[in-house]
Image 1 (cartoon, rainbow, N blue to C red):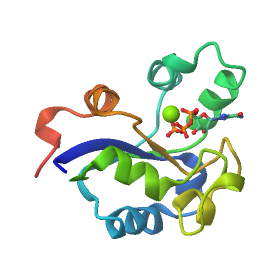
Image 2: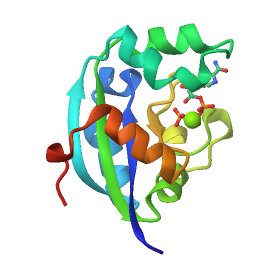
Image 3: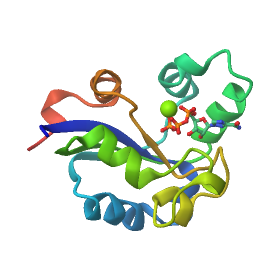
Length: 140
Ligand code: RTP
Ligand code: MG
C-alpha cells in the first residue's frame, strides 16, 4: 500500500466538547500522521461550497448550519492507504451503526453531529485539501 493523504474535519460538536485532542489521538493511533492542521470558523459560503455535492439532499441546510455553528479543525492526514484507513477509524456515518472503538461510536452525538469528516476517495481528498490548505501549509 502506498503512503497517501486524506482530508479530515473535526466537526463543531467535537470542538465544543473539547475533544480535538481525543479525536486526533484516535487518528494517530490508527496510523495516520497530521501533516497540516488549523482551527477555523467556516463561513456559510465555505460550508456550502465544501458540501456542494449534497446541495439537493434534504439535510443540506441543517448540515451547513451545523458546520458553521462553531469552530472546526481541518487537517491533512498522511499514512498507508490514508482514505480507507481514516474511514475505518471514523466509523459509519450514523453512530448507531458504527463499529465499537471508532471515533463516531465513541464520540458522535447523532447522524449529523458525528464528530468527523473524512474524504471518500483519493480524488476528493486532493480537491478537499486544496479547498482549505495552501501547499506551503502542508509539511511531511
Ligand atoms: P462525511 O462526508 O462527513 O465524512 O460523512 P459520510 O461520508 O459518512 O456522510 P455523507 O453521506 O457524505 O454526509 C455528509 C454529512 O452530512 C450529515 N448527514 N446528515 N440528517 C441526515 O440524515 C444526515 N445524513 C448525513 C453528516 O454530518 C454526514 O457526515
Ligand atoms: Mg461523505
